[in-house]
Length: 293
Length: 259
Ligand SMILES: Nc1ncnc2c1ncn2[C@@H]1O[C@H](COP(=O)(O)OP(=O)(O)O)[C@@H](O)[C@H]1O
Ligand SMILES: [Mg+2]
Image (cartoon, rainbow over all chains, first blue to last red; front, side, top):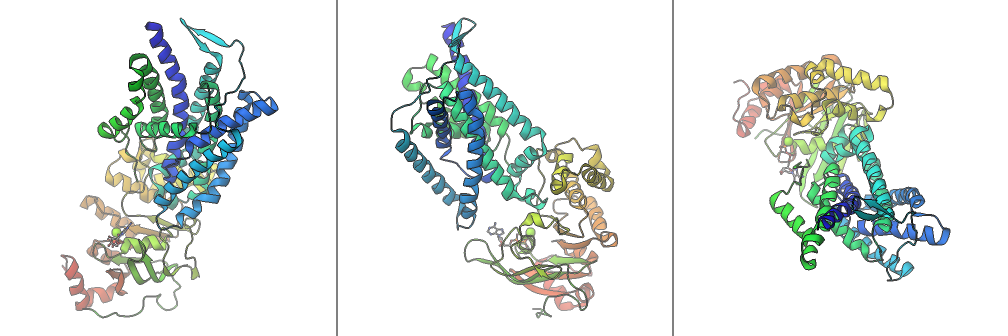
């Protein structure tokens, strides 16, 4: 039992790190652009497929796929922003339009991935040496440990950027008061394009990590990660980056420990329990920070 | 009812630094919030805008600053039409806005709030330092609290930060929307004196205010908005003497100019 709990804790941390990154990128998008990105899970899985293709056709190992995913997804996000988002602002009801657009994008991206990779679940046949490591009394796969290390480094770098540098503070300032950032002379369109690119870049990188952490993924996996992302965003407080990181870890731990302590049917609804519970008891999220409009 | 007196525009020989010309604004689809509103900000003066709550004063200011796009009419800077110019471009043209309500980044420190206002020249360390120093010199309490979160300060202190942030960039025009709303009377009086002194420092002022007495006292020229239209505009001399105007104002505020 004890080692089961330890197992749950360690895997909870590892999986939670992935959820934290999904939540962070999603909360940035929501905070800066006020966009609920239903396609975020597909962005993420796109990163997993990129790692898959890089390894299978070019022999590029997942760790090297990380920077490729970061750069290519960042660039794609930048492009997508200018293609899609300024058009929204011209519509009569930008909020509803953005909902519909991102939902449509989610379906379209899943369909494209289905077309390219078919419905089978994929995994990357890359093995680290040694294949697993002993952590206390239990064995954890090296791939998962490496993924966790990468998650920690990326999270720390992003937290440093957002909380210690002026461009990062400008992003957070936009979340706090979107009108005020414009009147102090910051081009909020450029900043939004950057936020969109950054969030997309993080999504791509997270996808590569998912290929390391989870046994498999397929064209339809995105929806599941979108939902987890939304729960993490709400739990962390809308538009709160640090909140999202902490909430991701909490969610991962809850999910993994639930499989230890609860019957399987119940374990699956833990996430929704967290979502509903947060909205009822603490609608501003764990850190209790109320986003200024 | 007071008659429309004359078309809004500059006094002869003086080109307005900033102008709204026959502007219509609609919020959702077709509901016109402003209809044909015109006003001109004369250089070196304080121009006041008064009117009852909901008259469209803030809407006019937001249209002026590019935060709302007019469905008709024009915004002019130095006589040049800039309708549709993005709000963040106004600072480079020397025009600063302190909007109604709070415009600070609550979670960020006082200093970071000021630094963000230096965004367009953020790489120029010396210039940023000079801008910060200007704000601190103006309001020394800001320097003492530079590490404090802006949102944790009192209402008055936050207002000083907003003013200091606007003035740090040495604007030639400052637009103020109800600068003493929710501020204790003693502090409000201080703020009015401060505003009154701005033209002498080369800063032109557009002051939107519900406080008719103070606005009329320090302004050189006053516009009255009502129901999204220009009601009247005139010099303050006309204002204080014109019985029609006085009774008009008395209609929507419990206030008499000669009181
Ligand atoms: N964002 C908005 N959406 C819809 N109507 C608005 C909005 N902001 C203001 N209004 C309406 O526009 C009118 C003018 O408001 P405002 O410009 O704030 O008046 P004032 O500043 O003179 O008090 C009011 O009737 C108000 O209800
Ligand atoms: Mg107002």
